[in-house]
Amino acid sequence: MKENKTYFDKLHTWGSIWSVSALAVLFAIPLVFSIYHNAFPEFKVLLKALAAVIPIYWSTAIIEVLTYTPIMGAGGTYLSFVTGNITNLKLPCAMNAMERANVKGTSEEGEIISTIAIGASAITTTIVIAAGVLLFAPVLPHITAEDSVLRPAFEYVIPALFGALGASYFAKYWKISILPIAAGIIAYIFAPSIPVGTMIFVTIVVSLLGAFAMFKLKWVK
Amino acid sequence: MDFKTDALMYILAFAVIAFVIAQSLFFMIKAWRRGKEIGIEERKMKQTVISSILFTVAPAVSILATVLALASALGIVLPWIRLSVIGNLAYETVAAENALSVLGSSLSKEITDVRQFSTVAWTMTIGSCFPLVLLPIFCKKIHRAMGKAASKSKAAGALGDILAAAAFIGIIAAFISRSVAGVPSDGPSAGVMSVATLLSSMIFTIALDNLCRKKNLKKLEPFVLPIAMFGAMGIAVLLTQVLPAEIAAYTWR
Image 1 (cartoon, rainbow over the protein chains, first blue to last red):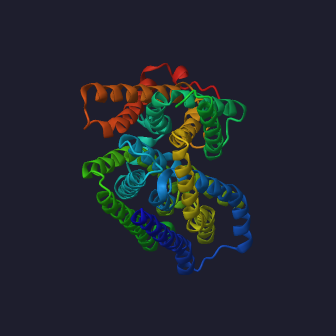
Image 2: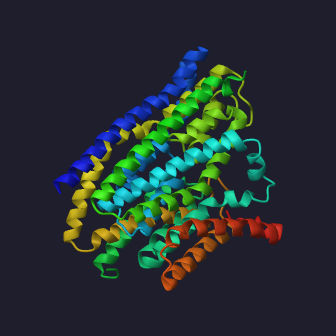
Image 3: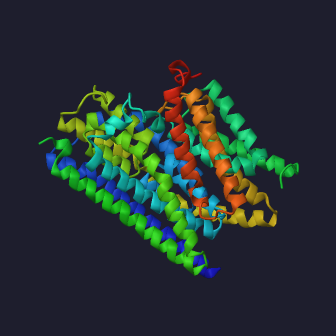
């Protein structure tokens, strides 16, 4: 147990160091660019642009950190927040890997499988984007263009991904699945453009309350 | 030479990529070693790597499509960098568009002013950096609280397991309900095609899962999700071709 504790403690130390380094790398980009071209933004203009962006982004960041951190494990969380594309890629990837390996997110096995899955996914994404930019940039617009035959495949990647991920879970836990899906659909009927990051918060809360009530009523074991 | 795609921008892009790959490898190696120590089979970890790679290809291509969509205004390199680190398909487009509208421009126009470009780069960076500030402060605390809750719920029986599954289901439910009734900012509204794709991928998954169970095909298991996902994407292409255009394009939102 003591050894177990040290691994998690180390993970958090490494994670903090990598996060701070990532911040440095992130800010180095506009900073180096601005110094090199001697073109810093006008403070007033930057402030105005940020005023439009920060309220949404920073509040989403708080919700995301609170929602995803418990699910993805420590290593997976530190990796995901640096490499990005969490909801549409890293999170479902980790969930699928844990489900297939038959491990729980809260266990140490879950922590390890989730970290390996997210790491593999992050490297793959980085390589696909780099290769795409360097090699296929001239061709790719034709593949994903408005009139391309393959366009629908990429337009509907999200329903394809979450349908596949959902099917295994719903088959296993159909009783607790009905309520959050119904809540999500009803909420979307009244407010169709709610950002999915906000909706996740709503459906998780409904799902947890529903599951808790069903457990207490002995509908699920 | 265009400042958006000059040597400096490419050097910055490669530095970011090297950083992201180094960090991923670092955590993977640590997890792998720890996995061996606590007795996770190597086969299981290898399968996780392979299925995660397969799983990632299709979403990665749609991220690439976003990079290309932003490239007409911002050049190819800045969107490439932004979507390789922290960036998110939907957010980056919104951040860039917001910054550009303050400057009286838009994503459909190419930026030619170096200071405008610098403003957009700073806006996208400051907008997206916040999780990296929060994590070193809160990640450990959240995990500690989770650990305590998990050990308590063990005592309370199976409740902890059910709540963990419920949290997963909550996330999936948000995306499923959006495909049925929502209007996403980064894709087509709910309609015939989104529901058909959703149902096909569910049917493929259930069929493949049953096949694995009945024929005891352990090796196929890690590939169920990628196969079902690609299958459903194939169905989306096929239906667009064979259905009458007005049915395929029908959306109810």
